[in-house]
Image 1 (tube, helix red, strand yellow):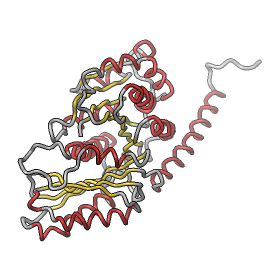
Image 2 (tube, helix red, strand yellow; image 1 turned 45 degrees about the vertical axis):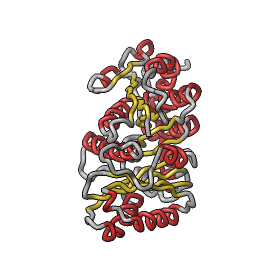
Image 3 (spheres, one colour; image 1 turned 45 degrees about the horizontal axis):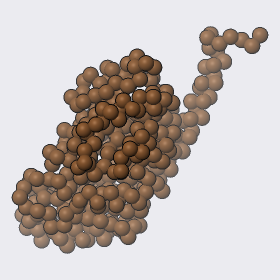
Image 4 (cartoon, rainbow, N blue to C red; image 1 turned 30 degrees about the vertical axis):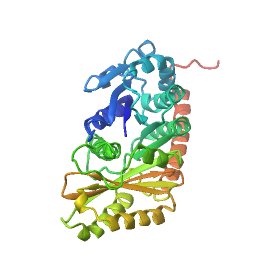
Length: 357
């Protein structure tokens, strides 16, 4: 699947860079651009960048204000669209916006760009949105809740990543973010490479192409992605349990949105040496996936890789009803009330305000 990558905000820029570097097929990403209001966040990146909002914030960012982030992106949308020229090519199957939903530029700017891109291009506009962890503060929760509601309306689908999903105990915040970025890049990179990978001459028995991904994501506004791998035997017949096991682990322990096991559609990609992939295992895994997620729409295929391991990638479309999504919006609503109370208290004691009398 060929996509143009657009990273919005600090987290989005870093993740877009990581995704571009994990292009397994070396042809899945047609172009990459990082857009931000903070000059300092763009400087370390090794991909093309664009600074927006210079007139409003002078390159210093929006300070977590996603309403300002949205206004800045709206004002400079034409400049962004011009910068994308040549990156969204005729080969593109989709455009992928990447953003952290808790900050200011990403959470405010990504929905604006999704709207603009949808009006200009006839291909799907997807978003990869990173939800803040539970300990990242009320403002981040509030921002993410508002952003996700808008982004889900403007984009064709939003693949959600919970920042708490893969962070190990004892990791620092920076270490946790780096680990999450690597895991996201691994999973999304494999998804994009399916059907495009040219690493070996052996063709997949059942090809997964861009239409399978598009049809899976079409079934709902929110999506999740999971992955797991395991060692395999040289004899495919001995790998029946290995295939079913990695599929189960991809869904139950390896998803970007924990507890997202109820979906409207699903896609299963089994990657590995074709001679090691048990076809009975693949069919068994697809059947189990349908039962577990409650959907009759389970697409599937395989991806040939030079590896002695087998891997399963699961893409779920329509996870709006999952417990994690409901819990997140409850948390975001409570955070919004907390932020509003804090703002009201601050205004009463602020020396910058004149009294009524």
